Image (cartoon, rainbow, N blue to C red):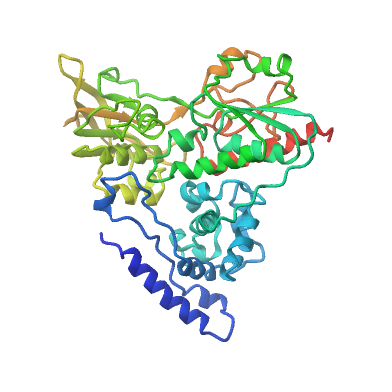
Length: 497
């Protein structure tokens, strides 16, 4: 499937915008719904298979203003209800339509410190855009106003034009807050708590900050320099960061309060324990969790073989098991690392896939081969213990299960083999168990998630938690929503509110 080139999209946008600007009367709602939705310019699929550069290139100014003109400025703002941090979406979009990009980003930053990140990786089609009146009227969520792409545009505009302003910090209060982890929930808490004048120290187990945004999401979806700029902003605000610091090993959680004198602790350690299928052959050489595979490539830059600090397995034929965004990330990374064939095996149909539609389409464009209604039964290897293939089963869909999706039912006698040398398992992650193991008084549920109240407070006084360690594997913006709630409660507690 061929797409218009970025140059063609920009020229079409210039012509459309000229027509809109030539009007002498304000657009009526029905007229706004006839404005064409703006397609995101992307790298050519054949070219991007061989590089780690960002696939989506971002709107031009003309495209952004046209897309903003599609917004109906609904008085009840249903899109805001779909946003976990409740950004004033109509407000920032109207500012784009007016050509005031700085005002637009200022509106977003009242509620979000990570617009360049969220504009790239958040599933807007199931959150804010799912509520969009335009999409509902056109009966297609893909025709809703592209809120995420507009958010990315103004965030990039601010960064590229050098107008980034450091959030104001109130006078020092003398209170100290420890934040465990440096992912999206932790970054949000650090920013919101530091703004109130409390001293913040962030403890990160890895040698780089950013959490899942750095080790989990590939460069071609989220450039690491964007995450680093957000970390740099926190440090400019006075947030102290300690890396290679494993709470639970370097120091126990309760020691931070009882011995180190912190007044509050926020736990944002994420969901970093990979799940496996518990099938024969998972211990063979050539079987990886998506977590390990992506961490080697993303955090340790294993794709840069001449300068990488870690090796990555040389693969010719790869199977990725799963249908979420992590599975797409792993499959598309394997393509870029030089595999001849990459197969994505998923036991339901494409309709039930939890991955973003955009990521599925990009994977197909890049040559990933989809095997739907199939799943692994066992992985087989040679006498050296290396993967040589995978036996699969075919499935059909039965009645809906607890997730609301139709349950995959095994087709008896449908076994078949796929020749492979690498299997990547991307069926989800459980919560990091280390803090629970070293803090027995911390209440968790049966999945290992920390139990918190409506303010993000755990069963231990002055200890709060949020993000994937509470929700299970979720999205960046949902983690940020958890962080905002916990930060507000921490600020109230520290000021006696």
